[in-house]
Length: 188
Image (cartoon, rainbow, N blue to C red; front, top):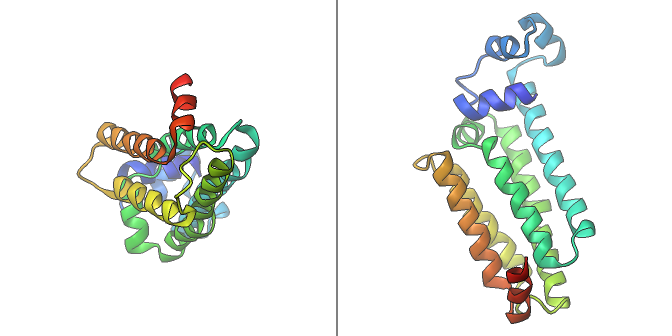
């Protein structure tokens, strides 16, 4: 799955053949088909793996972070590390040709990521490090829309896209903290 994810991210899903994936793995095409009946099953497995890792970080991050702001910093670092896999060619092909796999990503965003941001906002307000006038649900959707645009835009090469996502993350975080939260961030 890692080899397939890499090739999909570089070439796009449609342009990547099962033969290329098998060759990249050092196995025969027949062996690959023993694990995945067809390319669509492999694409779904790759997306399920991505979603599973996303869910794991969303589940673990609150428990390992001393406060809401550092929790978001950790989460944003994870998101930035995933940009190498979730590239515009991969995301474009998911939308165009692999409805079920794309639906998995959308459901993860809607049922995990937006609620995660909402819970983080609630936590930050309770810790008195975020602005008290924030609506967690609105902020969750705002972040997801900005991130989705940056990840899907083909006009940005990888370094520029990395910088854009980093700026989105920083601007988002600095926009939600209050004076006390800003002091915490400056200490970090």
